[in-house]
Amino acid sequence: QVQLVESGGGVVQPGRSLRLSCVASGFTFSSSGMHWVRQAPGKGLEWVALVSLDESFKNYADSVKGRVTISRDNSKNTLYLQINNLRPEDTAVYYCARDLNLLLDYWGQGTLVTVSS
Amino acid sequence: DIQMTQSPSSLSAFVGDRVTVTCRAGQDISNYLAWYQQKPGKVPRLLIYAASTLQSGVPSRFSGSGSGTEFTLTINSLQPEDVATYYCQRYNTALALAFGGGTKVEIK
Image 1: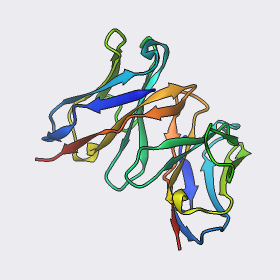
Image 2 (image 1 turned 180 degrees about the horizontal axis):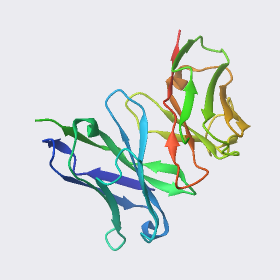
Image 3 (image 1 turned 135 degrees about the vertical axis):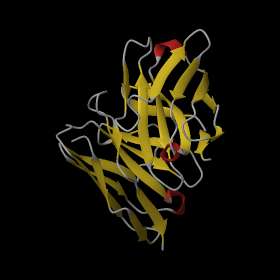
Image 4 (image 1 turned 30 degrees about the vertical axis):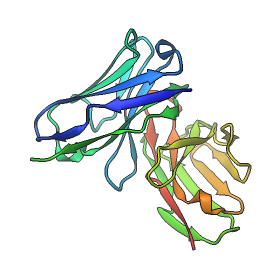
């Protein structure tokens, strides 16, 4: 069955950087685009980034553009999200999700990023 | 404008009631509208896509309608297990993906 397992979250000071990972299994990772979505505590879902199956296309939400990089390693079945210059408003659970024609059909359990001094 | 506006932000209804949630797009998105359900403490789940097509395994009491800029999610005969927050998502282009703000559905 499809499994997505995120890691890399934690407590980070403002201005620092963090790289999140998402390991995929149960499907052909190299054949699927992938998303990152975040959810601040008690708030709604915010789409963050999308990468195509071969990294030829990437897109980002305006709120993170310039500070965030989505990437993938198909040889490791792993998706990444690099977040630089972290701000308190980046505090959220970060989910990776599989793309199905721009729908998000499978989601991981999420990893919590807390930005605090 | 890629914003998606949901209303109401929350609602409370009795078991067995019909519940309606509305989602408005800032521009015409044809039928590229999906609904997700997020139960308390759980991961979001794809419920409906193409405005009205139920994802496999979704109970038939859920339905979706609309096109263009106005869409509706309806739960016929609300059940206790439907307590959740519901989000709409536009997906007409990879350059403008966005979720609505969510509608929290509770039982009276």
